[in-house]
Image 1 (cartoon, rainbow, N blue to C red):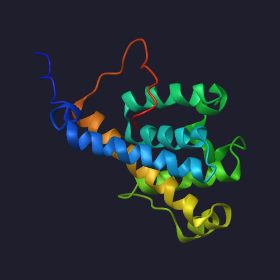
Image 2 (image 1 turned 180 degrees about the horizontal axis):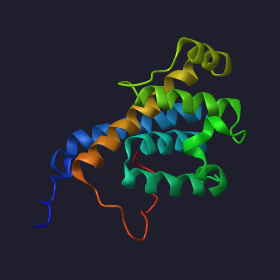
Image 3 (image 1 turned 45 degrees about the vertical axis):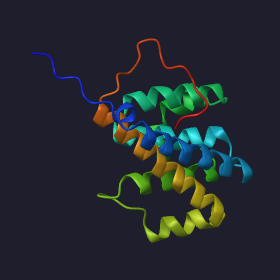
Image 4 (image 1 turned 30 degrees about the vertical axis):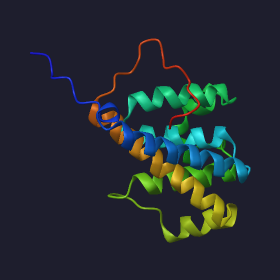
Length: 162
């Protein structure tokens, strides 16, 4: 017997989902004001989606990252970013924040790691990158609970969501 189709939370409670999307838009706007690139935000989105196992968001944000000039080489080793020299300090700090916002029940960002992050990023950058991670965590949960299918052809890269 095939599994029952899940309720698409984004469709069932569309006003709430629109509010979540508005948060993502605000995060991107503030990141742009601070000079943080869309490519950096997509690295955060991808890393969080990897940790959460959200195939739909992984496919979507990988396509967006590639459109922003990210390389397949760097994306192929993103899961082991700490073991490479491919990521700059600001990217490493953003990835550390992303993991800290996602792995709240397990290993948390240590005080020493957070101190290093504050030496690399401003308070405003830390805040907006943390909000980016918090937001994609929410989108991941909507997609995972709804069991959004991963499109065979890949998603259209929309500019207004997540």
